[in-house]
Image (cartoon, rainbow, N blue to C red; front, top):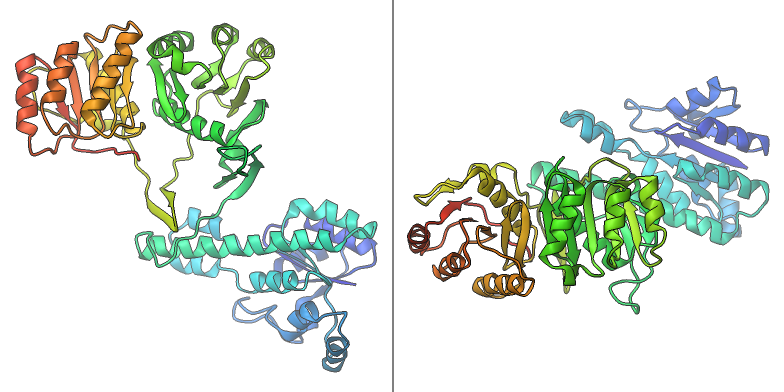
Length: 510
């Protein structure tokens, strides 16, 4: 039996080769892998002894050879193939272990296009595809984490067809994601990221119990190990809907960086948010906005949950608490709640991956775009349009309201008072309805909105929303501006003694 080993990432390759050698396998290798194995005392055959042709063109051509691909691809169970291999002097290659040139690491490290081109693997993917195609006869290895299980399977003769088939699928996933990464990079460099094709690839993180509903299947896939590095299921199993709600809550809470932000989300929409001196105060104030909706909701805590905060949270039914982390004492408190799920990032504060692009599925395809970014300076650099200037606290409230509004379904209006959200209207077909629904809910919750600020993620088309805000006691408003009736809106703000700011940036979320 012969194995061809040619890897860019050489971690574990010596031990893997030694395991094969102990079972009597003949080892063939190339370039740097050959050198490493030879230095480790593995008896190894250099590739040009097999190809009968030297590596050439600075290593660009070394395995693209009939003695390699014939050895991999000929079918051992077909007499014609076996006879032709014998006639041509082609010996079988029964295991191929390849991982590819580090293209991703290269594009992250340099903009040098010549170096980037040289880190596009050609022979590697070709060998992987050849071995995967002939998985019935050849073991294809593309993941160093599989070395141990493959040695065990070969040793125990348990490398069944199903076992090889699973390795085959992993191999084609490996080359497909590699090619997709190259195509996406080239389109990003030369076509502003919008080429004739767009490839979206993700690695499976885990299967959810089901999708949005029990009759649907679902799973979480990740980019760049984001969830592997930043998502720990400490208690309970994350559902499809949990993941979506957590995502929305974390986006809002983490947008305030190191501050003690707490966001409560129900069915994808924020129903509570606050930014106070402590996380306990933030949670308490966030809950006041809409405790009815918060029942069974998802809470994102931008920090570490301690025992006191856990005890406060345990006063109502919450489905999920997502936090930077939890103290051991907090986990003991939460252990009493059977239906509560706890997820953490293992960090002091919440983080997002900050994906450069996002997309949305529509029937028959998907729409793709640059990711929206609500920048910290949008409020600070906003243009004052009114005679009145907002106070320092009102400016802080405007920042909170603006960020929450930009991360909430349109049409959306957010009211914030003393660093806590006191009312929100979202997902409405009319901006006036969003404003009025928010005030109606606040009244039902017996929350005094007077003195609050208001944010709208898109412009107010008429002054009626300003008039309604003044009636409710709103003192400051922030919106993008851009309506043909902006002058009427500004006039209304001045009439009511409201400070008004335009950001010039719209943040629709559909």
